[in-house]
Length: 215
Ligand code: TMP
Image 1 (cartoon, rainbow, N blue to C red):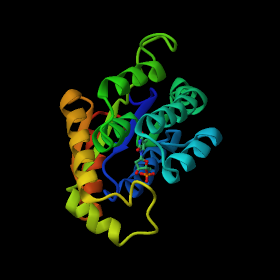
Image 2 (cartoon, rainbow, N blue to C red):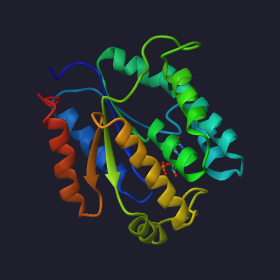
Image 3 (cartoon, rainbow, N blue to C red):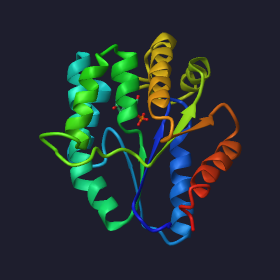
Image 4 (cartoon, helix red, strand yellow):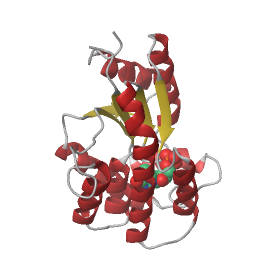
């Protein structure tokens, strides 16, 4: 059961503490002999990392921002994610399309129908990509209140364009995630991120173990 490719994404507002959990889960999979690709969005390939710099630091309108994150995603899928899954590897991705619905859709107020169209184009399902639409097998959603996230970010490093947004923006982002969870309940696993790291980790491990993916 455990040996086919698995695509696991990590989502949540900035400050939710995803990144350390990504690394811990990679170690756990490697410990049972799996090959793991740890990657992130926007980014993951040389081209997508260039796009990441633009998206995180340059001012632009919401549609431009969405087109860029989906362009980066397309390169990332074609160059890295799909080949890894085809080899049977585990792919752990820090953010994916749910972040576009949360940040560009919820945060920036971009039309969700536009995002759905981009999702289908970029992840398959209809022309020009064709084939079934690629979606994560599991999405770990680090649920943190916008107020708590704001407190954590205030103590953090130099903020990027998104981290510098106010709490009202993050409240809209959080709403954006919630809408996606409601639309795709079977794919999401909610983690209460307002707890110490070890407790959050116990839930991450349980979510993966209960699916039989560590056997
Ligand atoms: P990170 O700080 O978690 O690496 O994420 C980079 C930022 O990019 C984060 O603030 C969320 C934002 N983002 C979007 O706005 N749209 C997207 O589709 C993705 C993947 C990230």
